[in-house]
Length: 468
Image (cartoon, rainbow, N blue to C red; front, side, top):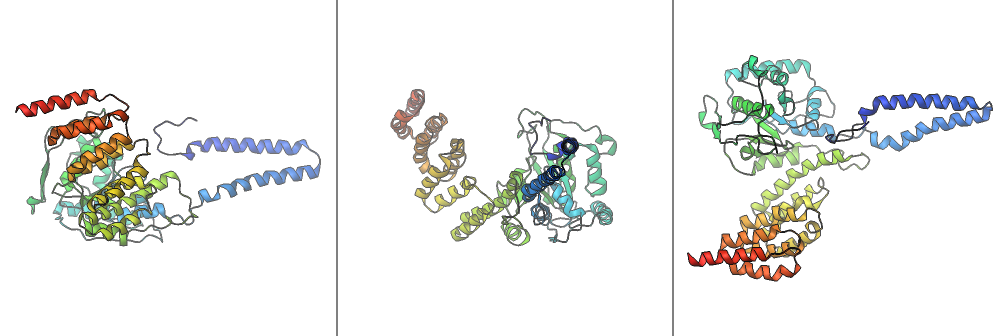
């Protein structure tokens, strides 16, 4: 059987029928072999060998399939649910960050522990109170796990009208589009600003977002999907009445990026836009006290590549905490939390943003150079990482260091012409035409492309500046 390229992981259950047919043929073949010989000793020997084959398979595969000490999937669901406040709505992305939550809610697991934060900055209306009470009454009858008050909304399923109805009728999520119009929803552009009203008794909590006409984070897709429109409608109808969160694993925050305040494994929608918002108190309490990390350190528990990727999401919380301490000048704490992050992140290259921030803030430029040489320079996509983290950080914070690190970029990645484009842009922005021209002359013999055109552009820009 051929699997499509779109499959995100190995799916052994696709082959169940083939395995069963294979087992039948093996059994028939084994019986045929036994009947070929009349000698009893030979038959006994064959029988022993055939019995040992599945035993050998059991021994070789036991560790991979043993789940007796594996709590990673359970803790993943618990940690998401226990992150959010009472009666919260949380948007999740796909199977991996949805099924563990549903399991934790549905099944009475003796290893599951519950944490409930009281809801803050929400003012439920009578309509929302009635909807929540009805949903909780239904879920308390059907579910036996923890945090049944939380409504889990899967972004993939939100493309279907039946699931929108289920969230409305069984999860208490307000969705103010008439029922007879749900089947008529279709992908479309949005040409008006998105107005998120505050609750009736606190209208000042509302906000208005200017959003692009289409989902710009998806290539070659000129419309918003039904799920995108559903998310906007849910936020519009429930904001200020229930806490609303996105799981950090979501592919997109549906234009709410600057309105997300990170609290660990989740980000809460707030009314004030700011890039990279965090709630440090809630973040630290979640990652240090609330979350369980069982089985991660247990070498006896087998972890496939998919599980390792999931575990790395915990590391991002510790990295955020470390960056928070760097920005506030608490460098010992920053190192403490970045060392905790390394428990979950297996490649220091993924910590580039932190080390760039930390070494620059502490003036350890030689350490930053060592990190670049050891981790970035050798990577196949190193030049992109260098531009995205090193140069971008310097542009925002240390413009006096840009020329130094542009030179380093030229020498580390002599085939990448983009550095020459950046150099010309830097000269134009900071009027450093002579300094950049000198840099280009210095690195020119070591580059794998011709930069004479860029030098001509610099001369022309310099003449224009002098004539002004």
